[in-house]
Length: 248
Ligand SMILES: [Zn+2]
Image (cartoon, rainbow, N blue to C red; front, side):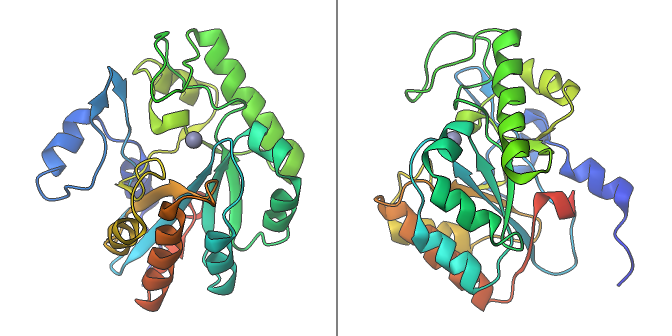
């Protein structure tokens, strides 16, 4: 197989607009990308691979560490992109060290400094505080990136919002700071809120090009067992795993 077409890949890896999502939603019902509360939930997909290539992404919002998921990633040698907050890294040094010890499985990217939503509005959503200004968005994104760089020695490339939601104006603003927007195409666990069997089924349905999203910071919730089971099933099915950094 020849080298991937980089121009095509860049185009497809860009978060698509709400309009583009709506057109595709007829055949891809699990795609996010609609507007909630006036905020955007960008879709990110990989270029078609000709096989079944999937990028697994998992979030470390504030919280702990789910070894059910980490054990599967390590045992099955599955590379995953982990979006970490600075708060989570401060509170979970042992788990951070474990991830740094397995760079083949864990690529750390930026989930913000304080898990503040990059929203210009001031209304909290799902208990998450909005930044409320461009200056506060910049601080959330850049301080988060600084923390990842300090921990890993590598400047993160990708940023994902707390809650996955952005003011429409925040997306080009964050890109202007030099970061790619870490959207996704398959929300596996709906904020770690779903039953394990449902999460596993949603994850197992990942198709070629999907960027899956879930949580690795909620070890006491059933959803994490579903992430672990779904990942094992994808590996059993011979899925080719990649990271956002490698694919986009
Ligand atoms: Zn989060």
